[in-house]
Length: 431
Image 1: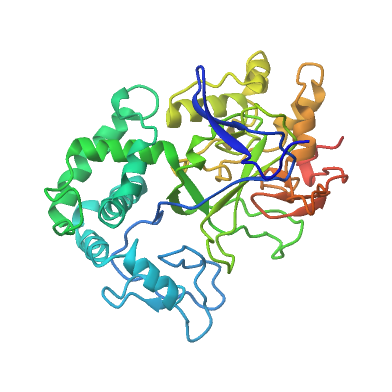
Image 2 (image 1 turned 135 degrees about the horizontal axis):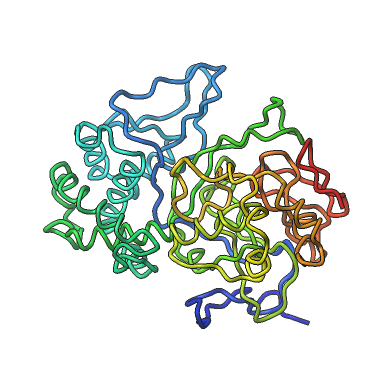
């Protein structure tokens, strides 16, 4: 019997896939194999010239803490604590403000963000440039606050040397050439503790942006139901990223279009470490098996998956599922192509990003069971709420016993593992 006190994962080199995380012992469905804290967090929102007004009590548009990114309380009077220096950034409490002042929202970072906000050069730029500027401010600040974490950031994989090839190398260089003079003109002198007293070079900015592109995880806005409730109704699929984080250990997970693990986050929980991400096993796997996440919702079709992987990560997927679907007809692979991503927020490993598809792919799977041996995955492990696109994993084992309750990593729906996955409306995926 495996020693469940032993570490669940080990780092290995796999031919053609690079560094990967593999099962160091047999793993059970629902088992937590990783809990990782971010070495930096930064907002995914654009810079706006005017401070955002407090939303009315009936507003469905939340504001987020600028430290931990949970939803700010909205009673009257609001309990949010503003930054005493700039007055623009708000925090969920004095403790969060105090922690941010020593880490992510230092006086240097506060002044840099304030000056960047007042600079007209970002006006009219796409959201991606705003977010990249926020990331670079956070990375420059990290270099002074925690040089070891900054070096850890630089040790992660990047593709800055790829030029115009897949992976966005050319776009990264163009972004760096725009942002370097902009940041040089607005940022205050580096803090005394910074190892870059003379500022950051274009080459360093390229290196940082390339690591951000491949390793950032998106923390999504809360899920809401179109029926106004929190039950099993239709999910409002119009969700965006509230913040991005760099999670150094989680960055070693490779992609598979039929993953054996999925990530959960509980950003709006009251507990400490609310920005941590938790990776749980979807089902049992033997020792030595590679543990993989899906970098996007598993219900995307073959063409959409291959396009996103090449554009965002620079590789062609040849997993078992893709080998099967590559032989499907063009009509089947292009069916419901309207679900492709058009919001530009696909940065990083947005496992629950808002690029959603209908149930057509699962329907095709059921019709072609002899050609598609993975149809069971869609029935058992895909959330059946309309527009959700989340993945179901068992709750963690209790006292060594596996759980019969499955949890969706997007909408949080709980259902018994023995229940049939019956979808609403046109998205039925009945067994």
